[in-house]
Image 1 (cartoon, rainbow over the protein chains, first blue to last red):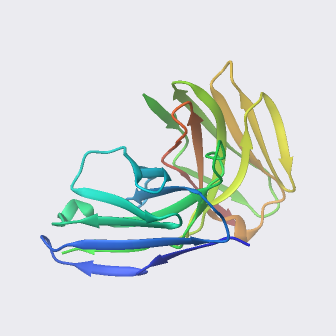
Image 2: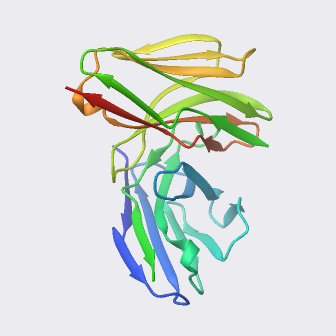
Amino acid sequence: SQTIHQWPATLVQPVGSPLSLECTVEGTSNPNLYWYRQAAGRGLQLLFYSVGIGQISSEVPQNLSASRPQDRQFILSSKKLLLSDSGFYLCAWSVPLGGDYEQYFGPGTRLTVT
Amino acid sequence: GQSLEQPSEVTAVEGAIVQINCTYQTSGFYGLSWYQQHDGGAPTFLSYNALDGLEETGRFSSFLSRSDSYGYLLLQELQMKDSASYFCASTSSARQLTFGSGTQLTVLP
């Protein structure tokens, strides 16, 4: 069966510090991978998605970046965090070739920038 | 652009039926998905409609009318554990999900 891991679960970082969030998927090959951010009481905002190693599409201009160094690994990074980067970060995967409507989410990382 | 509208809150009693509506404006629309999210948890997939009509999965059903750019999620025999946020999300030719801002369902005893 497929599982998706995210860490850390919670993170408190000062403004201006770097960020690295990691997501890994097990039990599937060549998944589509996604990073979302969710503000408190709001919907999910797509940040990045990837259909393969090294293939990243950015949806929202910001100070965040993403990388996919391996087939089932997706990393979200920032060089300098802003207060507005606080939120609940969710990684998700879907089956390749058209399964975007059904996505499977990881447990999320709750980031507080102070 | 892509936008979805759904009510922010709905309240119902245990055992009742509740309908959560969603209207969308999506370029290159493919279909409408529904997700459930409990407080502090990750969203989980409930259903997907690509064609007009009703899809039933146990106590949950989802409906789509492409001509009206409208869909709804119907929850029957409500249970306390159904208290959660429910999101509609559209898929499009861009092969991404665009989420509504969610409906907080509260089930009262």
